[in-house]
Amino acid sequence: MADLKSFRAWRPHSEHAKEVACVPYDVVNSTEAKELSKGKPNSFLHVIRPEIDLPENISLYDTKVYEKGSENLKKLLKSDFFQQEDSDSVYIYQLIMDGRSQTGIFGCVSVDDYNNDVILKHELTRPAKEDDRTKHIITQQAHAEPVMVTFRDPGDVNAFMNSHMQAHDPIYEIETEDGIKHTIWKVEETDELENTFGNIPKLYIADGHHRCASASRAAKEMEAQNSGHTGNEEYNFFPAVLFPMDQMEILAYNRIVYSIPNGFLNTLKQQFDLDEGASAVPHKKGTISLYTNGSWYGLTLPESNNDDVASSLDVARLQEHILEPLLGIKDQRTDSNIDFVGGIKGTAELESLVDKGETQLAISLYPTSIEELLDVSDAGLLMPPKSTWFEPKLRSGLLIHTF
Image: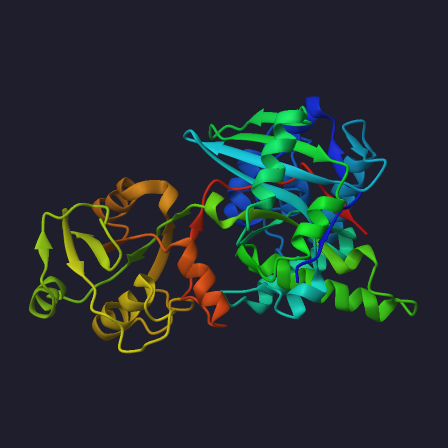
């Protein structure tokens, strides 16, 4: 059963929350982070992307980067902008984007639950990225950013959140530059929620596989240094926002292919019923839209030759029937001929990339459903890379867990 733990958070004073809060580290690269942080000395980007405060040619994995991140975090926490809570709490975090709300519980989850598959995965992680985040966690002695987790709610968590939000004023209510409203309520009496999660058998990583793996590795390293380890130390827990699955929305994670062979369209026409002039957005599961030479084409993907739930995903069927046999792309993680575009950017971005000659083919996909994500995880299987794009994104820097 799942373990939800309250924690004594560090957080900015409400009047400074907006200037501190920033996008997650993996949403922007170093150049974008540097641009976003211009004129914002208190932006949390200085903690999660500390290379922006160092010479441009420095390696992301240089020891100085990790030391700078730790220095920046300590400076921020000691400033007049921040406070540490007097006692352990959990929080309710609500995001509203385009009129749609998404509300979850912000607390800590257990490394043991992650190691023992109470918290289930659906993606592989990359060792270099794990190494990087693990070093940040250990050097900072903090989990600076939460992961996004989902679960099957029997109804108790949604009911608790609705009741608490109606009865209490939020500690934060900010609107970020992208028009998303972030509202957070503090929950000091946590027994009811902790007991409720104690009856929930599984949690599912939605976004943040590398942060989960890194939290596990960091805990193992901290345990090795602690002869009196009990398992209850703060480093054995890491922050997460836990959303009931009916609160979640997944957008498509689209593909671009830089180079396609001559006669590719003719090959498609020979093997599939190709619909010329199709909609840029597929209308149902099992259909895709392809953009090349200024036109959209639609087709229905054949069923997979395999009978497991992961193989039935559209992204897997695309790989099986088009990417590998027709384009020679065997591994989407490593092949330089393919790249990925989050659904939040829309199909206009796909058209622009092709029309400008930056790529030859764009593929618009139907979104993976939250039910498919849970089914794949329950089966102990993995999704193909870049199967899901969650939106809206959490903001970093609002609630920080130290150990």
